[in-house]
Amino acid sequence: MSLSPHALLARFLPRHGLLLAGAGIVAGMSLLALLAPLLAPYSPTAINAEALLQAPSWAHPLGTDALGRDVLSRMLYGARVSLWVGFVAVGLSVTIGLALGLMAGYAGGLTDEIVMRGVDVILCFPSFFLILAVIAFLEPSLLNIMIVIGLTSWMGVARLVRAETLSLRSRDFVLAARVAGAGPLRILTLHVLPNAAAPVLVSATLGVAGAILVESSLSFLGLGVQPPMPSWGNILMEGKDVLEIAPWLSFFPGLAILLTVLGYNLLGESLRDVLDPRIGR
Amino acid sequence: MSGASLLELREVSRRYVGREGPLGLRRTAVQAVQGISLGLGAGQTLGLVGESGCGKSTLGRLAVALERPDGGEVRYRGAPLWPDLPSAFRREVQMVFQDPYSSLNPRLSIGRIVREGLDVHGIGDAASRRERVAEVLGLVGLPPGHAARYPHEFSGGQRQRVAIARCLALEPKLIVCDEPVSALDVSIQAQIVNLLRDLQERMGLAYLFISHDLSVVGAICDAVAVMYLGRLMELAPRGQLFKEPLHPYTQTLLSAVPVPDPARARQRIRLAGEPPSPYAPPAGCPFHPRCPRAFAPCPGEFPAWREAAPGRFVSCHLY
Image 1 (cartoon, rainbow over the protein chains, first blue to last red):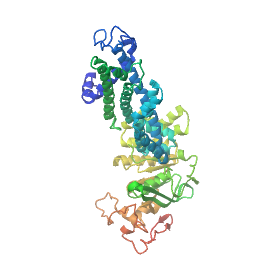
Image 2 (cartoon, rainbow over the protein chains, first blue to last red):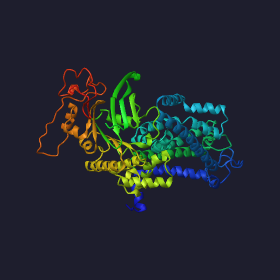
Image 3 (spheres, one colour):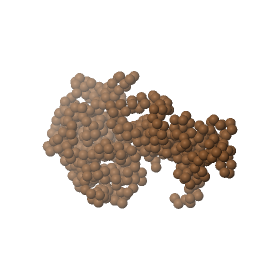
Image 4 (cartoon, chains in turn yellow, blue):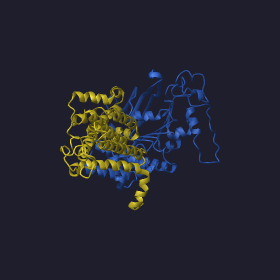
């Protein structure tokens, strides 16, 4: 029973290496974003006419952009945007998906039919173009982007939660609660939700990666976070015009997006593997 | 059965309609329970036996109002369950399920599970609920200190004790036991049956005891009802049913019960063929295609439910 920390790690590592890698990347990126004001050597918006498009050096570890701004500082602040968008958008989509999924799965019948056909209809729209269209009408602010991404990504969660609810509501412990007089609200919050939490957590983790990618794409197209506020997407966009003379401007934000999305996907996928044998915990 | 009825079923029927085929156009229906009348008095135990799929679990769910009958009526203390449940029903009528692994929420502690009914009905304050949980855990033979543990830390038999404790917390008058021991080891089965009997004596509980195991039913029931394909075949006090079954189906069932005495020869009635599909039950008496004593009127119409001898009811053209 009592294993040394070292032996525990030796047992845990081979089986959950990917989980640790994903969690490490996610934790590292979050830490960098949180500590951005402390870590950034320059202000992310400080223009320096004397140091335009400089290659990485000791003074500017990731180089400077066309306005002489320090890329490392901009990247650190851009990480805040990415993670903020990821969490808020996913928070919104999980909230909507949970509410509608629980309702459809538990009520069944006509309610279920209406909600799920609604999901089918919304899924018919190519969501990225829907977001583009909405943002084109609204002001492309950070808040609007988060809300729009959240409002267009809850359908998967709703389907997942509905399916879980459907199978849980006929389980004996739910019937026992009904026999004891428990109402729908109590059954959903106490008996259904905790038992459906694992797959929702997995889907939310993967959702963060998706939201970060969508925000970067929007910013790259100029419909996302507006300059001078830095985001990985708009750093990348500014870099594409000078790709031949200053490749670091495109390379580092691209790498950051890749790593972060990879981190969340690794974390989500390995959480799925760990949590899947559901009852045997 | 006795005059002062706790639970009464009158001509109760329930059918399940499913949709099949392209676009769900073809409808299929199973008549799970058909025209069943039963009564159960306070402190009594009524056994309900029959093979898999005969509708006995559906009858149990109708009795605890998890299902609504689409014909006939279920009454508790004389008041109909539908459309509105009698006020005390959800406290006084509880249920024990077959599989103790799926009847306890894996995310809640044992204490939380047992306390649920008290929470729902707002009985007592936090301290008195804790006390009550400890008390009923003691009643079912579990250390009250186990309240903080989770279901996965318990064996099947212990889990079934927890499920029984959950019922007892609300001081019920009637517990519907749906195959409460058939998922357990034989040695544990006896413990649980003894526990149920003991609790009945102490608390004056009534049981509707659903089982496919006649020896278990024989150990606990005052009266036994036999079901076949959604119909009630026979109802009799336990002793009389086991000694002298009237219905040919009951006779067949009883002849299949193992006798723990190798010297005693058994005459086993063997049935030909398979049980008919509940989707297409035979006309008339549903048992007639397999009945060793079937005769002219059997395929024609279902035999009326009649009292063949005092306290003994049967649905068979022979009587």
